[in-house]
Amino acid sequence: MDGIGLGFLITHLGIGGYVLLGWLISPEPALTVYLVLLPAMATQWYVNRGCCVMNNIESWLRSGRWRDPNNPEEAGFLLMLCHWLFRARPHPVVLDRFSYATVLVLWLLAASRFSWSAVLGA
Image 1 (cartoon, rainbow, N blue to C red):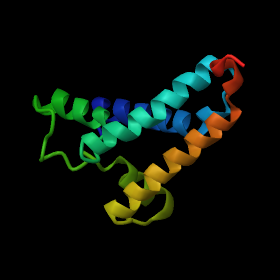
Image 2 (tube, rainbow, N blue to C red):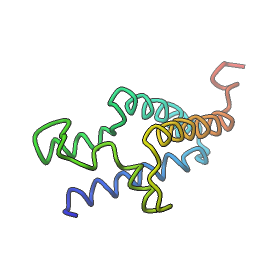
Image 3 (cartoon, rainbow, N blue to C red):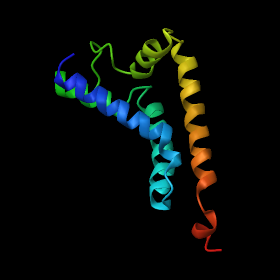
Image 4 (cartoon, rainbow, N blue to C red):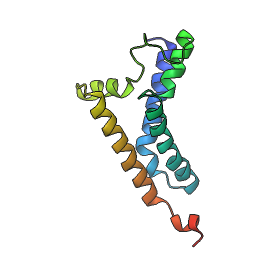
């Protein structure tokens, strides 16, 4: 793994950690960012055919192309993580469903901590 790959891996892991634990953030401005980030992230996965924009940026830096069919890591971060952690490679459809469900649960956890009365002016 070269410097670009390592840098993007560390960034992916950092963002993943924030996504998993961000609902614990207590200040409401941070929760607001989190509540916007999660659906935006899920939407870009869907629109980008299961590929993270960070993978696209890495492909662009390496090959000058936004989508590089020769990049085996494109749309493969979560599959790689499952293999590392659980020694399993779930079917991409199963992993997609699990990912979207996880994002929904995390969003609901964050929303439950948010003071909606402040937003609604009550």
